[in-house]
Image 1: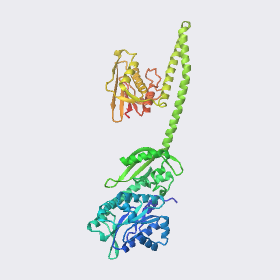
Image 2: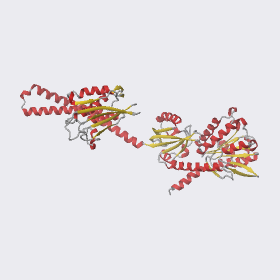
Image 3: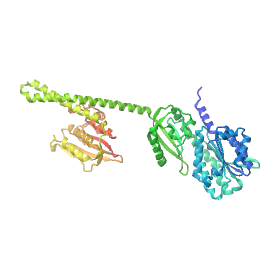
Image 4: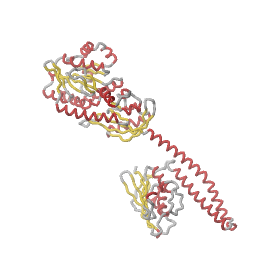
Length: 568
């Protein structure tokens, strides 16, 4: 029988709720951070022994940092009384008991950042070993007045981030060393405090903090619901690249169990060729706090390769310190395969077109040559009908030659990388116009080309082809009832230059605006004798250079062709 959604949510919630072993508290979720005020050694034993006993029984890694009045050896002795197989847990490394001098005061001084990083390292170690999480305690009896400010800052940071980790922590404070201001500092930096009054333990919690925590918990629950139900692959990543959590969608496709990924380095799931890029992106994320649609390759547990688009953002505490990142991967594997198949097919088609065009060119040239020879040497021997047919053969051979030239030009675009240089758009346009306008009388056309056209990074040959086709069309489809006007211009934004060629010719109906950019496309109601390839060539050149091309036109009102050139 399949588990329904509600049962799954209950099961997932149960994994977050842990038995504390402390009767007055009962169960608590991961991320619980509280303190104990004590006066005697017995107070410490009364709370910490059942606390760690429950942790050992529930597959948690336990870390106990001791200080007077309860030494390291005394702590082990008390644990042996409560847990019969305690030495086995000690040998396996499930619990470590160390004095404060080897933890808080390593190298003789308290270093806030070092201690914080060491806790995170311990958590990563625990999760890697297959433990559900980490349960810790530290006694602060060693604190001197000079260390108090640094330590309260440390406690504040622990309190702000612990809720996002599989960690539970008790901090022990001696009542004899705490004045009124110290008590306020301690309670403020913990979710609640335990204190013995008249022989009974009581829980102290401020109502303001309780309200804030309830609001935070509600927000966290909403986030968890989104995180787990999101169909994209989601991860929570620590600032040092450790996977803190993985959602169900990612686990399903990767083929891992959650405890097989949590605690591992993020690079675990990436393909070898993506690792250098992943490391660069991680540094970019740490610097900017954001990643957007970065293409990466991940590998499943079975070795399957998936292409994903990676995006990430950060979650910060109230002081702006990064707690963790939420990384989202969108699977584009099938889309990528389809695109690669279409690239492959296009390449095969273009290679075929190139081969056919090249091979057909020689016999067409021969036909043209034979026709020219006959017309030159035997013209007087031909009757009118034969002469007419021969001239038609020659005209069609010439058209075939032009068509083959256009096919070859089209097949070469994108197959061979063009050399780009800084060129003058105005210089290219003047050169083109000098060629295409030779058959026109000067008074037949008004040509407008401004002096402020920009320099662009482009292939001069390709830019010449673009303007040659656009300007030829402007003259080819002019309106015989009015003087022809052709205008060049440009606009620009931060990313692109947008050039336009505007004419006052016969115009194009809107239903043909896309069709005219297709190969062999000619409008039926025009008298053009071209091959129908000019605008297809323009489109392919522009798009091969990451640009766009389009037309604005209406029948009878002229046309304006636009195309973009990226600035970078």
